[in-house]
Amino acid sequence: MKHIKYLIFAVTGLVFFSCDTEEFLNPLPDSAIVVEGFYQSDEDVLAGIIGIYDAIQGVNENTDTSYERSNRGIQVEYLLTEHRTDNTRGQTFEGSKADFHRYLIDATNVQSEDYYQSMYQIIFRANNILNYVGVADESNRAKYAAEAKFLRAYAYFNLVRLFSDVPLVTSVVGPEDDAALFTRVAEAQIYEQIELDLLEAVETLDNSFKSRASKAAAQGLLAKVYMTQGTNYGAAQQLCADIINGSFSLQNNFSDVFYNELNSEIIFAIQYATANSLESQGFSAEFTSGTRRQGREDGLNMVEDNLIADFVTYGGNRTAVSYKTYSDGATEVTKFLPDGSDINATPPTYGSSPQQAGNDWIILRYADVLLMHAEAILAGGSETTNSAAIDSYMEVRERAGFDPIADRPSVLTKEALLVERRVELAFENQRFFDLVRFGVADAVLSPYANSQGYIDYNVRQLLLPIPSREINLSGGLLGQNPGYN
Image (cartoon, rainbow, N blue to C red):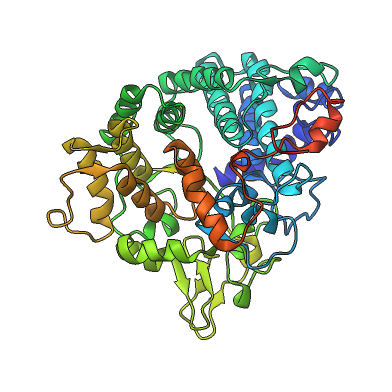
């Protein structure tokens, strides 16, 4: 997909960035004439679809430092997820990024606001495609619509899990339509729309792509949607089983999952390109340690001691691939090292363009699906003896070097599954959502925060605040989450 994006970047820029920066839900009316005039052919609709992925990809903070001009997409997602768990933290206590791991987020936090806006960028671009999909070739209309709906569902799933009730916008509307733009809709209704969009994607898409929407990606995301709500575990199990019975497989070498891009394990990933200011990402550099930092900050996503303890016991051969501890005690994430890195050199090296890294961001991979399959069979219970659940659990563990007989449990517990997800998917922005879905978020995070001296933590902070900027734009119509001003 990278070469396609180079060809259409200028066009999508005209379509999507001519709007007033205050209108994040829909780029109207400023870009209405441009959009209406642009969509004339199948190629134009495809270009618009690729533009949705640009919104997910986001703009590298090293390319444009302004949060007013450029949304970061998923490039700041680790702050809203990993940093709000017992997995990682920032190197220092300074700045708005450090507020996440200290549980000091308020409604003016720029990264939280940026992520909220980025997800709505995805949504309004998807809505634009659905509005103009009729100009595409008849043979492509259904799959283009299903792809747009998959991406809209992906954005809403992130929003509803992090912010709860949010505005539900499923068509192109004008900036004066306050009722649509700023009325918070109940979670149940948001989930209903997510499910409808994903069901259409499952029925319509195939598995031609890994860096674009696919049937398997829709199946995996829908399974997670069902389990997040604590419903339809049987349907979630079948969705995961369908993926398991398909063409995906674990990589033999855990390192290849991250450095052999779009491999057999990848179901859906967002691509980046090295040394390209418009197509690169900055998080790989930010994940380097404070003493060897390659990014703009002092070091982000530093590994917490209790995660290291779990890696010692449960990590197996994943440990050396996931993080490194240096002789001075500093740790850094090694799943997403900038291209050309050699951390075993003296001193370590990080390639020629660490701040413009090309490492892909993996949204869904096969190991996640295997563990979800076991979770669906567990169906919210505390344990299971079901052999299919244990088989899926052990397939992931065996790749990590554990013995298929000696290490196979007769009973799979919720606690064992959660810790397996922790070490397998560490630093991939899954831990926060896992803790919430398993119903143990406060039970885990409250004592963790207390042990770290984060006295401001409380259970209400499992939801992020609605950005005050959005509330101000709404004239007060958009309400705030409990516990925030």
